[in-house]
Length: 281
Image (tube, rainbow, N blue to C red):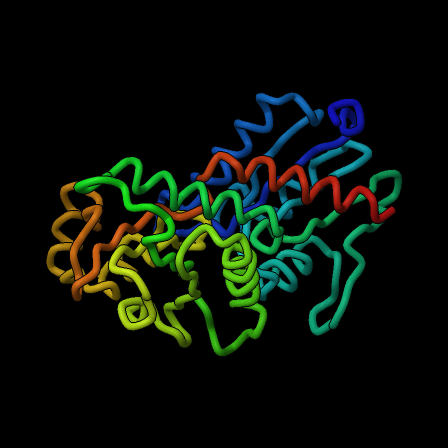
């Protein structure tokens, strides 16, 4: 693989945030890892809502080939409209666009977001396995004695928002590792709190299918799982984890993981997206 991309620049683009300083951390984490592997001539971070802005980053690249990989979960507004429009790949209101476009002597490859790649399954399973091994109380439960939940944002405004989560639930369920596997969402049904009703087992693992550990994963979901808002805010102020693993809630033992976006396997998913895009021309 290295010899195939020695003329190329890889741009990893994330959402970013003006209120959450840690939002861009996964972007920088995976940039550093892929720089270490020396596959590309250059690997650059870029963001939508904060510097370095994605259009400024891409516009100053002179490499013959540029691969832009959205570090996003779903093929929704940001990955399929906002970022492509900012890069001049599509016009506002356009229903479709070419993901590979020539710009003079340069070819720009706009890859699909990482969250819809089927190999994200390994990242989700890695998070679930890691959390019970890290907090085995009184001992790590066996997967067959555990209900697994993949938590997403969800929205009734965009049908694509939940597709990546539903697909991962389908893939993991087919592997027959956990007793039962379910999707749960912040803004659509089934809701986060429904996990207690849906779980077939006493042991529950909840993996947030989000890129970064931001407000949704650190505050909203713990509160929706039943942690008092006062405790969540107190722990935030003192720099403690907002969820204690495991916690007993409604007769269930609940393990809650970090967001999946910082899982080391994500670097390999990014490379798969690049390989997929490079075959389109």
